Structure formats: structure tokens, C-alpha cells
Image (cartoon, rainbow, N blue to C red; front, side, top):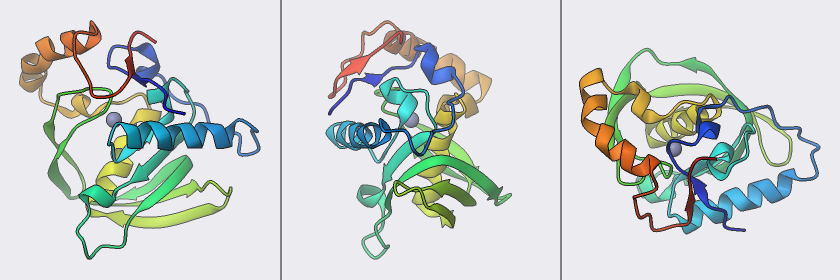
Length: 182
Ligand SMILES: [Zn+2]
């Protein structure tokens, strides 16, 4: 089911998400809703708090942003952890379905080692790099109540303030159903 995407300004986006109970009978529906909502909004990742569920779950389908020769990266990530991050950071332009119309250059570690449970409840450990590492870190931040704009300089934050206010007041038109003040 396509669910509305919670916009910036909603307190749920600033909350720390609770671990998922892997045996929760509602989990398959949550995962299905994340996929449906992400694809409808043409996103490459979506975290549960963005559909109003404060749980440690996100989905990624990086294909649209990957190189054609890269193996397509698609998956469900439950109770994820970043075990290790390379000290070197690289810049990349980021956007967020909860912040429509905003794109900014953000520095993040180029490669990370992660652990998570997949949708079958299997524990996985992987080393990620490139765009896949980027998307994972962005979605993981959502589970901590963090947003990409938190990494901007004070000056840059000042500059985007009017835009943030518009999003917060529901004055931005997005190409997908949205919800604010959740
Ligand atoms: Zn986001």
C-alpha cells in the first residue's frame, strides 16, 4: 500500500526508532508498504519513520543511481548497524523524500561495513562503497532521527531556512502523497 511520506517538521523524523521485532506479524506489511511507497515516489531508499512508523527498518533499490556494470543493489534492512566507517569522506549531492525540492552536497565516509537482518530474518554483514554506501548511511540516519541537512554548515542552514519553513507549513507540492506534523 502506498502511504503518505512524512515531511520535514514532523517530530517522528527526529525520534530514535525502536528495534524491529523480527517475529512481528505486522512486519511483512510494513516492508511491502515501504517498497510501494518508495517506488511510487521514485526514490532509491525509504526508512520506516518516513511513513510514520518509528521502527529500525528501511529499503533500498539503488539501481537507478548505479553504474550499468555494477551488480544491482536492492534489499530490506532491519535493525541495521554501521560497524566501521572509512575515515576518508567524499562529497555527493543528496536529496530526501521528506525534504522535497532540496538537494545539497554532503560529505560522508566512502565505504562502510554494516550488519543487519534481511527480510528472512538472516543476519548479514557486508562492506559497502560508492552510491550504495551513501544511500545506506542516509537511510540509517533516519533511524537515529537525523537528516542530511544536519551536516550543512551554519551558513548553508541559514540559506535553506525559508525552504524548510515552506516544507514545514505544507506549502510544497510533491509528486507523491505527503503528510506533515506527524
Ligand atoms: Zn531521507
